[in-house]
Image (cartoon, rainbow, N blue to C red; front, side, top):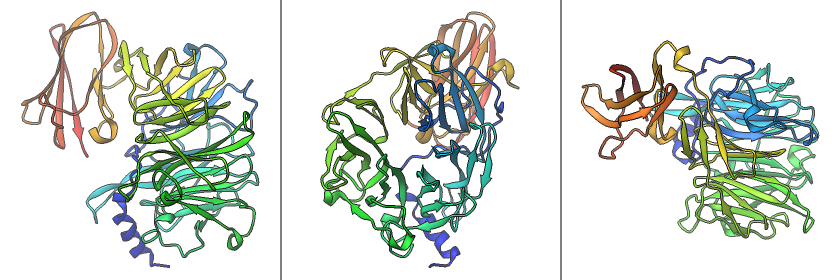
Length: 487
């Protein structure tokens, strides 16, 4: 075992290998804790799940892992516009993983960005493990397990039928707790000494337990299968599958499974990304015979998560939401143009990170909010987090702020008009030189609105780090505030 200080430096040096995009807040946001609201509290939706132990036909609740923590959506048995939301902040930062155990407890891990002077950069850092026994209203907190939380965050969490909690941690391999989070131990999927610096298979991104009781773990070097996890650690046997065995790529960032009622087989699907071999390719790799053979689909697509409804398979990725009804042979892509009641316009959704089909409602988690459909994807509407300008200290504000064009894609400029007006919006740098003309004398109705800026200037070049000002001119008066760009 390497000394903690040396291992910390080594883990920091691995930052370039952590290719999964992370969207964790730099700190806690003010939250209206557990008040019923008509909108969620965060626009970045990492994961969406339901309680697997509840009866789906009468269960009206969905759980959301968000950029500011936890949100519960309920009344899903009612029309889409009657959905209501409650939110809480389990710990410092945003959620990085969520699961439900056999006792109906919700488990969530959180992470934040920590500045590390050794590399002069912000790195993803685990900020704790949290458990709620009351559907997310209150939380019991446990420290991040492992030697160091920096690069030790949990990207995934799974709960087994015996009460065990398993976490896939990038810099801390596989973490296991058998006493409800009171203590954790580090496990590997290859029975080798723990050394994530030299062993890519010990840098974990995903963990999943199938209905048949098999444990799957995805790493930076393929997929690992344990067919019987209910044995002492020293007796646990693993099989490893890599690109050479038929995967599209060795970075396995998500694993899920379902039982197909047409052929009575259990299918395991994995989001497999290209790693270091030039022959690898992004896509989905799947098996129905416990890894003896592998098939590939959606080649060229970067997929973030995979979910199911009956025999329908849904994949979320850089190019939106995909659906297959024939075990992954043919895929159709949803064109999600979701109505935004805040923007008073349709939003074209590009990336989708998470998905849940619950009762008759489809939830698609994006970086701009939750896209919701009550008619099987024919029409969509956005559930967006925002603070009305009338409730803010300023007449206009920008979020997220500080803003990273690479991470968040765009920043929203929220403002409120007392009456219908012609709106012009300009972005200036610190020297008050114009950087971008966003709007020029466009008509807006009275009420709450927002404009979006992708961080680029009038010539299409991304603006450098620094302080910028935006001015919204309407009806002879100016509203202004600042934006900080920080990559």
